[in-house]
Image 1 (tube, chains in turn orange, brown):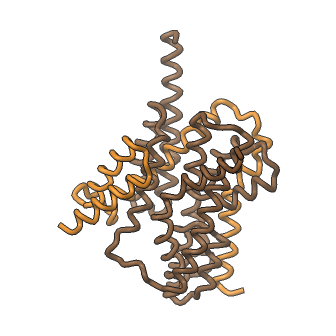
Image 2 (image 1 turned 30 degrees about the horizontal axis):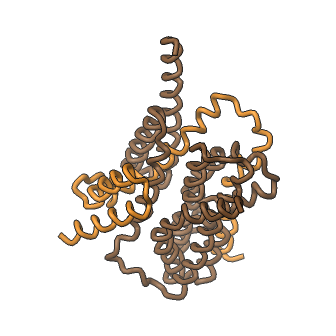
Image 3 (image 1 turned 30 degrees about the vertical axis):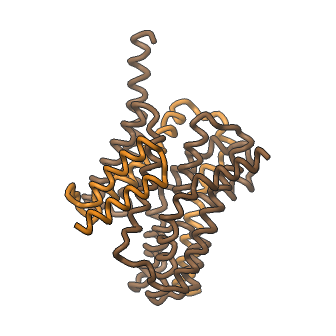
Length: 103
Length: 237
């Protein structure tokens, strides 16, 4: 098998194994202890913030509050917070970024 | 009828995210093709691996002449967060058969995870309708990903560099992050998770910075919640 297809199969199997991990055992996790539930509750805010913040704060690989993405991200964050509207947040964020970069 | 309305709700939740997914999928199709790995490899990555950032990382390693093992490790490092999503979804999908849970696992993406966990923890939730909503979101994202990958293979580098479409991806997660902050401890989890990810990236943790940030945020949020509970008990509330 070629190097490319070996990678595709290995990465595919490995990624599926991570996706399936806890779901595969879910029926045996029926009684999740409270302290585990407490940890699980933190996953959405912690994981989403860990994806979002570096993308907004380090667009070129370094923290730069003067980068247009930073300002556009802050404005989009306000729109997301007030409206929770994905389309509106995208429009405001992208338009702000395009305008700031054109300046 | 209730089932189909839940399906439609899942589709509607991810519909605005297409703006971010399509250009990303075009790149996932175009990058392996233009770097000499071939269009079939691009489609193979999108169908078998089905996780955007990790596909680009693996293709990058291969195009630079790296081994299959290094390319696989690059992809799996980026996808470590799927372990967290799996743990987070498991209690909500425990009632399903093994086969259905494995189907849900294959369709797991950041977006499908985030819209589903938001809906299921917001109160508007009934156990028997969960899978329908998840499929509405997950299958839509899968179809868009495959079609835009194929379009990327056929069209090559058509996405103009000047359009900041890559910015759409963090913006989508920003909208998902807001409803996830439901309490003081959730705010602590988000603040510490985000700050730790930024710090880890600054220390050259690269693709590991997301999982480092997420784990830090989880521990901090759980500690904050435990502290809140204890203080609440002492005050007799």
